[in-house]
Length: 259
Image (cartoon, one colour):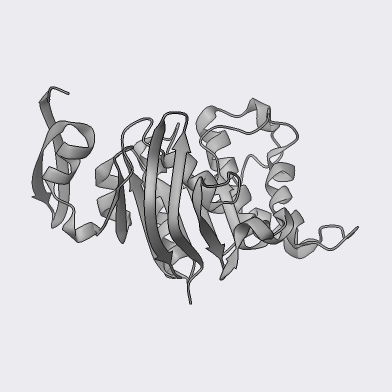
């Protein structure tokens, strides 16, 4: 069973083709990392996968159905999207904001109940915000608001998670915590697609890596097959590979290559 399928997907901005002829299928248990420089189309690709932006060509299928034919409620039941930046000014308490994640699952005029509130409690615990549920969202730090947005997705509990720079505003421990939780979600038969800036986080958590050049072709490879040359071509910086404690790391070197 495939949760998301991409058929000859093409993404354009005026004067540029960012992604072209991308064919892929994402099934339960998979964690996909998107790597690429600024302006290569990572955010636009995630928006397209979530049905928030129409592709220039090709199709995205959610559960085998063209996502453009589904209403937003149906999409929200099956797919959760974490934008890179807040979509609106923060309002209400942290608990209330997280509870909004359940609305896609409630019937017409149905009110949230004890089970929904218990989901919020567990989600806030998962992102280490369980002692701040009463706080106004606007009073939280940038990192806390980022974790609050992740908690809302956990309350929504879709099979597919699209995460645009989920580690923004987070310290290293929180980055590992959030991505570790995303990894657990994928292992529990969910699917995660996340754009990341740090190749080492992709190496640590992702099964597969999509390399976006911003010039059309997308290179799809298993994480184990990522090499320094791939990153050098992607970022125009030389990389060295090392192993520490049995884990692979890629270190950027200077100088930057001439463009």
